[in-house]
Amino acid sequence: MTDIGFSDLQADVAVVIGQRELVWQSQAMPKILESNQLLCKTLYSVVSPGTEVAAYLGMEPLRDIPKFPRVVGYCNVAEIIEIGSSIEDVNIGDKIINFSSHRSYFTACKDDIVCNLGYELEPEKFASAYLFHLGLDAVIRGGVVLGSNVAVIGLGALGLTSCKMSKLAGANVVAVSNYDSSMEYGHIFGAKNVLKREEAQSLENSADVVIITTSTWQDWELGLKIAKQNGNISILGFPGRGQELPNFNPLSSKYLYTKQLKLINVGLPPEKNDSRGYTRFNQRDNMQFIVNAIRGEQICAKNLISGVYPFKELSQCYDALIERSTSPITFMLKW
Image (cartoon, rainbow, N blue to C red; front, top):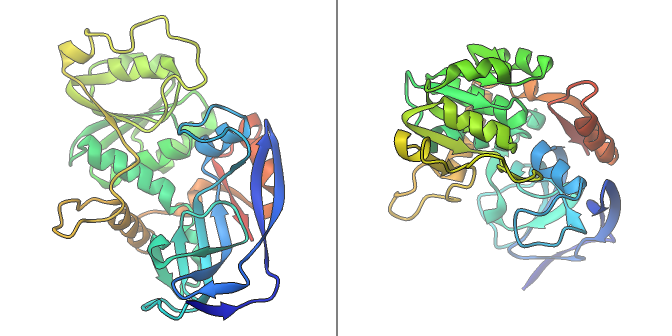
């Protein structure tokens, strides 16, 4: 069954076609909208620095997909501009959080809506919500409770969101970074102390939960040292990605066995609750919690954004994140 007809609507889509080569491709949108489809116009999207810069630099994909060409991005806030006839409880004009890549228009199903913001007047506030969700998942699955001692290694976007969510959970947070500007932001996002890596050696056996947001073996070894007996390590980074083999055993028994550490891959919880409520802290519910926290000003999401640029300047944003000349955290694109 078909529904709504359109003129020749073209979407601008960001595609990485080679190392540090990003192009904008024009993609024809369907002339006919199916009855179960939504037509959406992107309003804002936010760069997820680790994932997108790695793709831009041509690093090996984390999943079984081609290195090039690749679409990039997944932090999207859009407006619904047309609705198929069989869709209910969604309105034209609703602003939605979704996982579309960096593109100006797209079609989606109702189930692709992560959060419906309704007629939200400031949708840009929520474009970085998923980056906070990743920090929240590290906190929940890492077992952070009121009074926990948490060490966050790395103060990029995910390190900062992990600090914030750990602080909201009632933890005592210490963060580790060698960048002076990131150290300042660490305090803003809830870290009680921010130490450089050399100084952080003094934290040995001090953290109930370590959240590792970087990929170097140096930071992996530091995390093993910092974790205390029966501690948990939430892994938000990708240890060893782009690195030579380490000169130490990353699964050494002197850490894992003697301390009885738990290594927990985080960031990919169940998408939604099941019919009997067994997956309570799922992606949809967690994202709604983040949205409510932003609305209630428990989270100041704009502090994560180092600048807002026209969407066609995405490659310049990537270059700035690589060069770090102004120590950016991440950028928002306006469409």
